[in-house]
Image 1 (cartoon, helix red, strand yellow):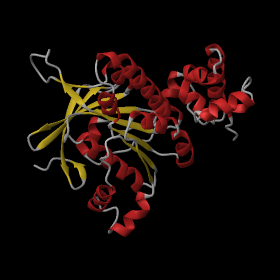
Image 2 (image 1 turned 45 degrees about the vertical axis):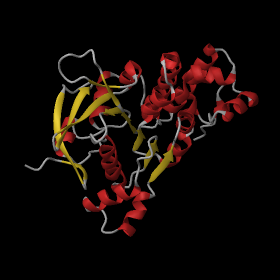
Image 3 (image 1 turned 180 degrees about the horizontal axis):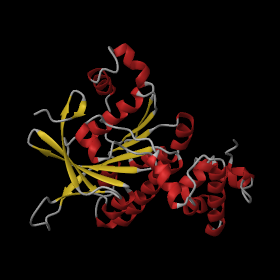
Image 4 (image 1 turned 90 degrees about the vertical axis):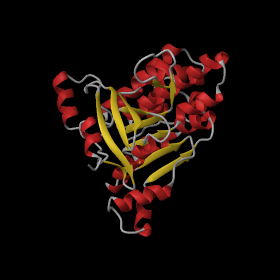
Length: 318
């Protein structure tokens, strides 16, 4: 179907030109960016932009491209029962997540360095591409290694050699974003790739840490949190409108005010925390690693032990 923005009433050639300069080219983009951002881009009143977003969403709903927002409780129950989950093939961690990660949801995975955040994402990516599904990987820390994907594919016996692995690697669209400007530009332009590839999984590895590094001092706190809030809004909307799972990894800091218990907490504040449907804390415990479901609309706080090995993450072998 036609997804052009000029089908919306009041969006003329001049407005289309302004929107296209900022990467807004389809009805999906209008919904993902939201009325406040669309109003800023076009210079129009927010009330008018609200109507554009509402009408764009209505068209997508009527065409069956997104979930209806006015489902009854019973319809929602049936819809969620039949939703597809992507497992990581580590039984303990999959049980923690009721079988795996779900589309239309965002997952925040946080923990200190070496706790297994990136390996968790790589393992999920391998499971997705082994099922002929596409993956989008946005690398903010320059830690993505295609050789590691090949190794996990071979260790999990999805391929026999490097040559066979190449066709699976083509299913991963990779973007390196060395700074926050490029990160936001990449996220804003993702809809074109997502519409073409329809990925099952979108990974944003290390994004919040970039804002921490670039916005230094208390004087930049408000600007930093505003930018992070905009990023989080986009990621939530990408998950919902494109029916994919969005996972973003996060760094941690130590809170000196906590006298007892674990002083480790994720950076980014409440803006980041409230954006996630699920929050999972990874930590090291000797040779083992622990994944803790910290926040979930359906799960209790619980722990799962796992190991890091050649297969990515796997169950602890007693």
